[in-house]
Length: 381
Image 1 (tube, rainbow, N blue to C red):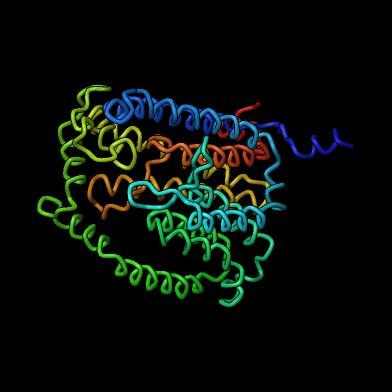
Image 2 (cartoon, helix red, strand yellow; image 1 turned 135 degrees about the vertical axis):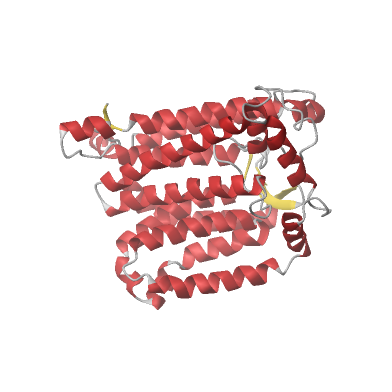
């Protein structure tokens, strides 16, 4: 009986999307290289170890790879049974932050277990994908009315509001994830106008509740004169000084203490400084290729739940990449949003790799229409 349960839990499949796996691994290892390059100066200043941040990223990344491998071999349908537990557990963790959370850079977002610390808001992205995909599948009838939609999306809304209190950018990312899955699943799009209008009103009020957010708007409009525009200006200097082909890997000048938190939110500026505009465009193209592969997996998913899971991951990566690059280039106000795979952040990378495992798990159940089509879009495992 135990052997049968294991066989039901794990699924080898006949096909596997190797191009997606290759792109994920490329971004993963490229991110490690950039963290090693970008954080070397800061690591030596803070800990007298130029590889300090790299080693931590490698540790979390290795754990994330193991988790991705495990999740990619399981039947993603099992996530349905645990979606409510995962979502409620995440909300409890978000609440725990206000009780025992540890502060860093003026914000209380972490839970410190002594040997490891993590951000529950990073778990929230994954859990909201799973829960929203499940609720839009199992309770699709609720989405036909405004009241039913509010009931179905109550837990995600609670989670997003709790995140917004401490981390507005992550709350926006989570909101985009939920709305995208909902948009794809709902039969009546006009409901979205009411909910989105309420969401916009909430965020407008929320933005005016803290004076520092007004400073960010001023820094966006006038970075050269604003007191809060220093980081943005230094990032733009890095991009401009890199030119077309860059200074060379590891040769950045702006990472030498000029750009605050350069290994986190502003890592793309040093990518452009060291690898040039060409290098930055190539990385954007790699992200685009990954999202294109994920779109194929979503279209080929054997059920609605699997398709919506992948849609949620697409929304997460696409929006966060766009938001980060727009912030670095001063196209949008600074929101403190990391670049997936590449920015330093152990918990962010680890849970992102779990999301990749979910997508790869869905890909294992793709059944191509013909051998020719199958050879073009999926590889035999």
